Image (cartoon, rainbow, N blue to C red; front, top):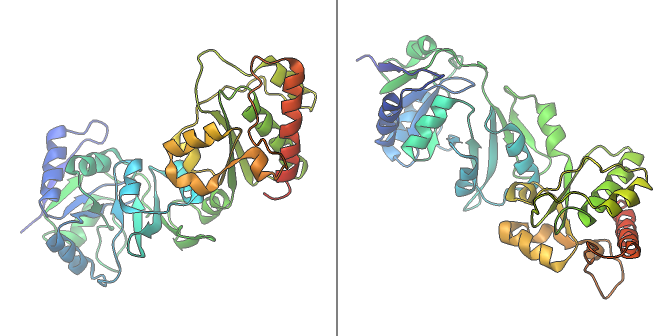
Length: 352
């Protein structure tokens, strides 16, 4: 029996056809769907019979698991644990896109996960509301299919439904990377070059946090970036943010002047509020007060071992580890605050 093929418009997917494909998929049938890389055979990973059929069609060893395809970036935390900052940086850079990440899972296992950059694939997976496995829609040894005609040559009669949205945009499989530890391992080079992935994974990200991102964290960021540049260190990204966002509040004039004396221009800095994405991709989070640490960990408790008071991390011997907010204080207070932060930066540049 020939496999049913339905055409879905890539630019404006017909919702009834998306629902049909997602229902068939959820019920345990095998559905070939388009992605931006190649066509894949989607199966409900919670349905043992469907997954077994997939193994048989692909002639794949049972001890070699299929990667999951998800529809939302946040869903990665449903299936993976202990995601390292460098892995989050890759997620933020390349998802949705042609990158499969092998991450730590429960019971000392690993799981491959990808967020495809294809409107129809995402619509079907999201509508189905299940974890979906989706290897390339070809028989073992044959090229990965870029069109439905390619799929039919191998799979006509072997799968239950094929969704046709035209040729896949990239025509090349995803790059597969094991990010369970450093150094990362490129398991398959595909649409994204391994050098680009390694460059991002091997960088460090440092986040400074204060209250309104208008003075202390701005000072710290500016001073550290200057030190890094002086040492030709281009492997560190520096971010600053505040735990609150005050509308209309920019960098304080005192902060601008103090940094200007160091040859640092922060006139174009726009204060921002710290968020979960900043925290999870940061290798080191340096806060000015204990209050800031509490607020950061409310947003992302898993960052506990990466959050430090700036003076604490810099090993400044002082009974008072908080760096008090200079907002509203006299200029000499700003100057004292600046000198404390400058000393801290001069210490930490030696250890990062």
